[in-house]
Length: 394
Image 1 (cartoon, rainbow, N blue to C red):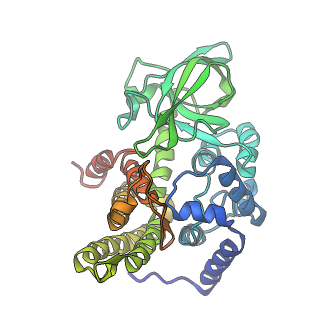
Image 2: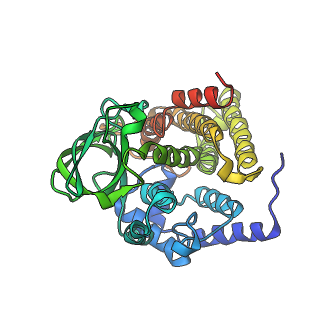
Image 3: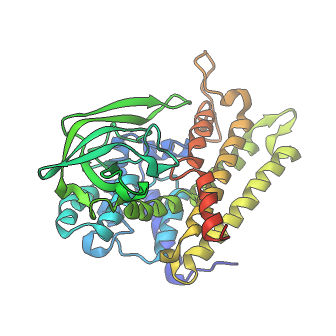
């Protein structure tokens, strides 16, 4: 498959690339180029507002709610160009996940209340799905929401909650009924993180960063008006949302940018009397990663621009998630290997080095941090089960 875009689409691609080149602040660009997945809140909001001035902060939304109203082709090219230009991802939880659920399942009152703050970037959200004993088997969650008057009273906890420490709100799944099948007693709620009874405990990841947390609920009161959909119908909404998240985690554009940095690094690194790029063994591994990535790129385009477009995505999203995260991890592991001792993150007196734009020590952090991508949004093992059932009929 040789995907060719129209002249209008190519002009749009150039417009995006030129806009990012002219407007992306250097400090944000540098952070992204170091493979930092989650930026400080100030940086995320600053870039969001820059895009907002162009009308591009929430490109997948319809124009009636402040979005760009783009075609799949435009959206694809936008995501690709910002990734290749070392620009940050869109603010993930509010823009990419909660807002589509509000637009699909929310009431007009909920849309009018919550969408403006997401659109402006003034209100950030986190996702409350996983629990200490409910990760890949999400339907086993036990954090309870008990109806009392016109509200739910929540007790329990959520874990691995990315950005909970900087979020204004949380959307999540809560147990409202235990009498039937476990998927049937789950309700989708939105919670103000300033509500009394909520406490956030940091969980430091292996490479030493604070991105995730455990969130505890002690008699937290949430009004019925903050429920999306009907009580006990949250599982259907969650499946819709997770389909969006799994598609986004293919990250083809960002892996292409990471691959380009890896090649540049190999050409700059002195090894014996030559360069690392002269080593046939190492470069054969780079070539394998590139072949796999290009194959994934064509597969993604085939799914996106085939009959039904992105709306027809089902088990295909799981396939993209599996291969996308595996290839992404391979590229970052090769980057870590390329730097060798200089790429290790330590507390000793080793000087900080800049090699082909990559800061020594950051490669190890990225390698270990991105190990989680094959676990979140439904582990890759779960995705394989989905494919086995939905596609192979096993």
